[in-house]
Length: 113
Image (tube, rainbow, N blue to C red; front, side, top):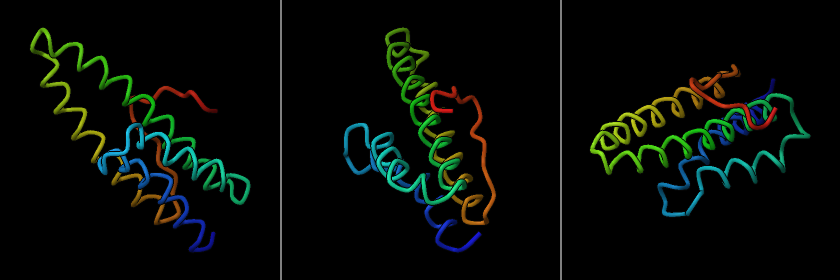
């Protein structure tokens, strides 16, 4: 595996931070666009992209549920935990991809197989 594959795999995960830049649904759209343009070039990038997109869709669902739970006060704790979990998992996935290894996100629903 060459350095370009590792970089592209890492970008599949890093682009999920686009939502932090104020782009609505950027956490899904960024990795989705990058993955759809690069998936044919490498199996590794294809795998990283699928994992990233599946995780971001799953986290979006969890965040929506937590937001609803804020009306009964427990959702605030869930939002904090989910935010920390997302940050840590994405960083771990980036490091793994940079080392040429696959990363399986925890608690992820496989929408794209």
